[in-house]
Image (cartoon, rainbow, N blue to C red; front, side, top):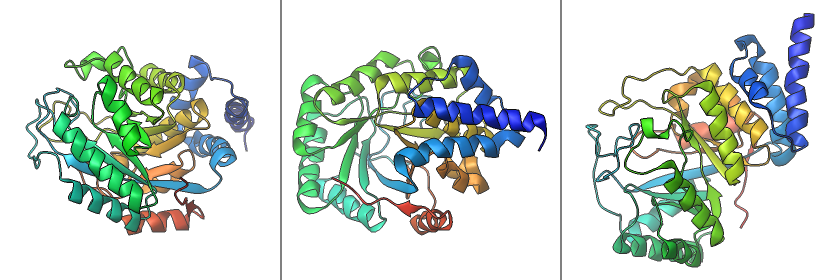
Length: 334
């Protein structure tokens, strides 16, 4: 091993030491992870795994999404096939009935998912939509041992409290990208709207879930900024999505990611948010491809099954991937 390689490996281990000590990497240190040569990928992942293992051992949390309401959205998010500016040929329907949402929870358990995520398109829930979700959550929490996450858009003051009272454990509202890049992706609501919704969820006692989408034309510096912002927000769960450029969306021709860079982003997220659930999310299969198993060295959670309007890897394949790594699926702890 060359002296240069030894020095580089020691640097990544230093970052792991800082993360474990609760110290924040500087912008320069953070960028060095993203700009690292590919021959440094394995040492970076090893250092990130040391942090991950400290907090989570070899356990992997499984989450499952149900697309409770599809399309029909007035927002103009450039990455989303459900937005008003999208021409993607997706299925469109109003909020699912309680019985369908409850059946989805049972399917999540069958896939060994400890968290069931009820996701609905739109700026925020109407009263009727909110009631449908609330009634479903009450039944799920009464009959099934699992956590429930809701992702219904921007919340009004009383809505967060009602979801919490119904039994919702976690609320998701992704920041998606850095504050100074946000208006390049979405103009119908602001970055601050998203911050405010996450804060509302925290105020009523729901666990905050907020993450990002990487690959939307942002700079490396902006990737670091979103990692810092999620640390400041103190999100318990951080879904890291990698852009799946869907035909018919404004970002359909944007394909700037490769598997090695995606893994470096996940390692950086672990260094900056050492004790948090880092979840490899949308675009995992498309962007990580054959390197998917390596993502669980920095990350400790994945989605099983399909996403909102795109297909995911079969649950049994994910289960086998986890077993082949020598890791184990974490049982739901309520």
